[in-house]
Length: 339
Image 1 (tube, one colour):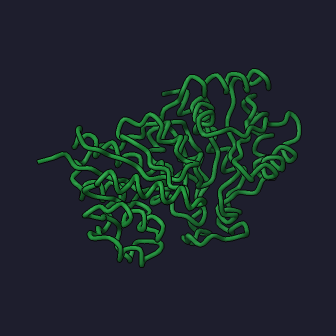
Image 2: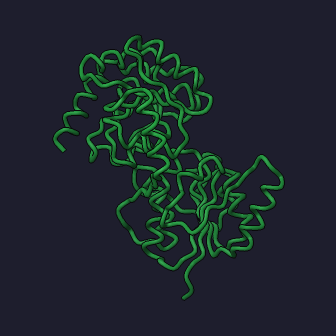
């Protein structure tokens, strides 16, 4: 039987792409000679760079009509035997349809965020397990992958390391922890003044400085954390995805809500202190956090699980105290020192 030609579809966001990475590894293990491509938004392509499970990335630039036409031509030319849509949105299901693949595998309407997208699949598969990584692997296994331990191939290039070396030298930091105050929706975030208070008290306890990471559009949020921290102030860095990977890998630990850099850090086996409120960490948490000495904080008595994109801080996130995070940091560093 000829090797399959597979199109994997997970176009964004960052954390969701990370949680889909094990599917390419599992499929490559089972089909060493297969053609395995990945359709993704251009801004996330760096995460797939150097991934041994993937032959080619197919950037889907929806902002340009010419880019869409070129992508569809490229998809059609590959003659995929199956397209596997991990995203379950109209836009991703349409990419599967546009590919011309005979089989289009995805989640059923009862699971998908945009349920009608399931009508565009030939095969709907109910996910198994609690976590999104397990859900994604359900689709890969339906397509023929053998069960295997999840792997997260993330390439860190010499140029990424050199950029981080330069940044750390310029700010005079060697040992550090990372604070990541962003989170997409405000209801998933922890307030910047609490990150500032946390930084001040962590410096007093351990003597390390913090680095505040912020993504595009989060610059003012990062500055709020720096102002709230006082002196000595944390360093504020805005890095591309490659240097961010290199920085996270060097961190003593990472404090973050449910957002992309948290999941990158967990995939790199860096200890994380994950702050969870409306989203469920058993489903969306940092994968493998226990093995790396991390801590997930969620106060169940205040938590109402919802994936609605709230514009205000949620009671569940506000219930997480600085003292809880300090205690988690102490447990994190103790576990790290004994590993």
